[in-house]
Image (cartoon, rainbow, N blue to C red; front, side):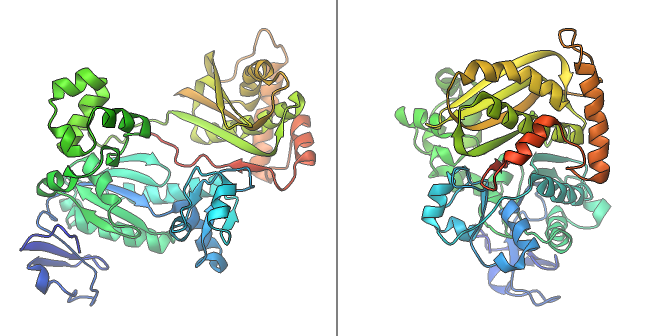
Length: 448
């Protein structure tokens, strides 16, 4: 039961959604319809309509669903001792394993962890199924990543014949029955508090924060508790004596804006639980990318180019699947000391072909390689917009033919499988690849 319950509250059964009416918490012990003792109680339960829905340890939950043998074991999605953790189940998190942690460190903390390479394509497919369940409740669905989204259920009572809270309980059950994973729900009156609430009761939870709850609940929390406040900004705030959210409330909006710019003003408003952002279903993806970590550092330029082709191909496949293209191409490298290097080029028109992305990034790689050894390479596109068709490069007359060949290859791979057709560079990469090479999953791909 929500710890912020008042003396008289609205009560719903968490398992069947039965509206138990207005009850004192002491009498709301079991559902008369199904007998469940999981009761959701809150004074404003029937009035709040902004929700944040977040899948619980999504990647790992999908892997456990598909392999019952690992269901009760600590599971980590990632791979290779030189890779990083893309996701960790709650069991693994008990040992301190976290996403973005180097794999060797994760395995040191949890030697019995089952490591699964994972498949972003599979996760994206299942995330799409979950998204369709959300859209069946309301068209106002704003994705944050493939496994979480904001929903605005304002005005849906007449459509569904139930309150937003009841609709969300039904959503949890349908996703569990259809997809086989649990989701946690945060319900409030704005996006910030809905996001905050969804983290309060995991996994398979449902938490509520209303106007009366928010100010008291947030007061003693550290500034880093607020979603979006990174370590660097939190450290800057702490240096100026702003350690808790109540400390921020003591500073005027004008002073916060003067000292910290727009971020400071935004923080000042969130500290008062004020968030006027609408749930925006038209939010667009900012970038599409892929990266791979090597089992051993690579300094050979041709081998690095082979790896670059691999991530360019995956980036292109993902952009084609989304029917988007980008004007900005990005090369990412990480050296043996874990230092990241990013180089970008802006092109004359949006691109989505692997061949075009590769040839745009190839000279950037050549200038950075120079005998340096790298442990990771990535490729991405941003400045996204609708594709405008493929065009030839006047400086590269063969580019048009390669583009036509790539489109034909896409059709063949779609029909006969990913290995139906490959380039010479791709074949060389496949023949030289060892099982220890691992592609890192990009984690939560932000779309807001």
